Length: 155
Image (tube, rainbow, N blue to C red):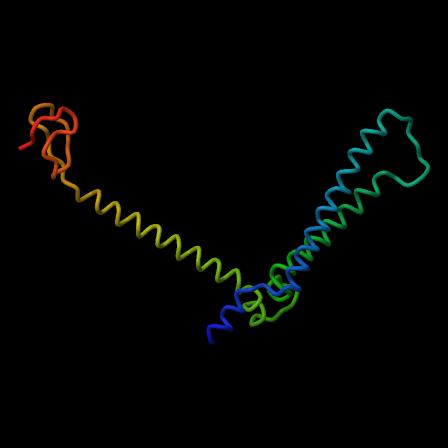
C-alpha cells in the first residue's frame, strides 16, 4: 500500500463526519426534549390535574426516541456501517476502523516511548554517586568541590 492510500485511510470521510454531527445534534435535541418533561412537571404541580389535551410526557418519549436515533447515527458516522456492526463484512470493518486503529497505535507508541524515557532517566539516577561532606555529613554530587550545605571543601 503506497503512502497516499495510507494517509487517506487515516481520514474519516466527510459523509461520515456529517452523519456523526447529525447524530450528536439529534442527541442534544433529545436530551432537551426529555428534560422538558421535568420542567413541565414542576410547572404543573401548582395547577389542578388536567386530563384533556396532549400529555406532557409525550416530550419525554420524543426525546428518548431522538436520543436513540442520534446515538445510532453517531455510531455509524464514527465507525462506518461495518465498523459499528450493522454490516457483516470484516474487511470493510477494518477499513472503517482504520483511523481508530492508527490512533490507538500512535497512543501505544507514545506510551512505550514514555516508559523507555522513564527507564533511561531511572538508570541515570541510579548510577549517580554521592559523596558525603566530612564537616556536616550532607550528601553532594560526586563532581562537587564544595559542600552544597555548608560550603566546606570536599575531599
